[in-house]
Image (tube, rainbow, N blue to C red; front, side):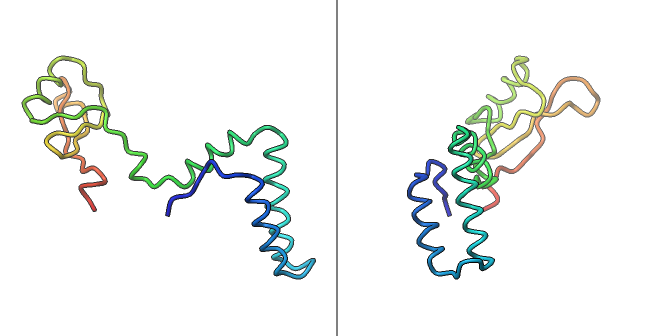
Length: 124
């Protein structure tokens, strides 16, 4: 499920109020909803809403969305040429002919090589 990090504070407050009406004053649910409402107001009033939105977004982003491919190559030859050019950096994640690879130091310590590292979409 996707969550909207650009939520409207007034709408959220109205929803919390509507939900809270179903619970008796002083109940654990009433207390939890009041704490959530006041926390959101505090974030807004202390001008930290943008920071909270970013935190909220990162909290709910699935791991798949956080994987970033730095280069894409149609063929292994193209990828090898890029690797040999010196433009590659260790730990870069690249896609070669639809498959993921990580750039690592070669086993003998001379230069870089590709290590097969499946991308999230390959594992679905």
